Image (cartoon, rainbow, N blue to C red):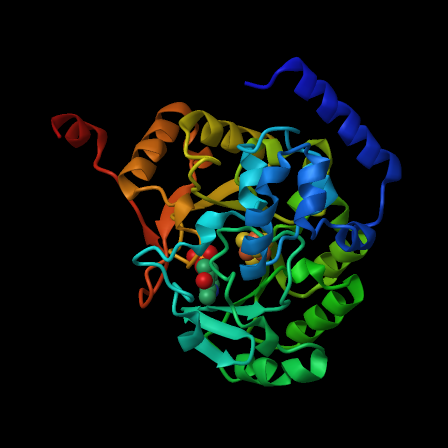
Length: 355
Ligand SMILES: *Cc1c(COP(=O)(O)O)cnc(C)c1O
Ligand code: SF4
């Protein structure tokens, strides 16, 4: 439970951040990349430093100050901190974990272009993120092979042009919203000229971690595109959804752009019916629809976040009892080789009782 001192500390911390109100690019540049600074800002035990520094060599620490401001100082178990804090556990080579758990390297149609599912293709539009999530299934992705600049993307555009079955293009990454507004505008204008494309989907965690990323320029690019836009954000815990984040999501909605959320089921973060209920409630109150709750992909270094599927099914059953149907996300797992993400479905209630 949060005590009063912590709440007071958090309040001053937030107002410090607000007082400076940096642009999103400044926020990105000022993101914390040094474990010692993170421990210091959160008044955490320096005894963690060596372990944290070593694990950050596997996958760098990156966390924006706006996101740190939503964490409880002095609490190493804070659910937002757990998502970003490098730990010695990441060195353990757990059985069943893989560098590329989804075998994505088999689905590259051109550099940076992944086509696994019918009608949809995904561009790994950027090789970096505003926040490095320790459980990320692309934490070992060879981003250095990702094209940079419009010229380098031409083979991917030509592959898209030659496959008329593709209706929807997904900008993913990394995080596509680390690209500047003008780079995104050029990219979207080029995609607009591919006649069979109908929809443009953006997968991004930036509106959650640095809400000022939802600029007028970004909204204008999405609104003026010939393609119908959909934004899918990524939030795992209700404490991520503060006022500024709510306002950022509202800007998409007010521009007529639907917002969906995907979350990952994570031990010690959101493996709890109350937390998941609150996450869904806050999302739907902001008019952002819960879309997927992902079973963790078994990427090397992240298995300490793993929750058994049986537990996930119990949690979904609890959400069904508590929430409107539209507020219950689909619990899914990605199984390499399947034609779509696979729903993890429990038994119907009457059978559940018999078992
Ligand atoms: C998840 C994913 C998609 C999108 O799948 P939806 O079920 O439509 O959300 C598309 N391409 C790839 C490679 C993916 O991993
Ligand atoms: S923002 Fe998304 S792509 Fe980037 S590290 Fe987090 S989960 Fe991975």
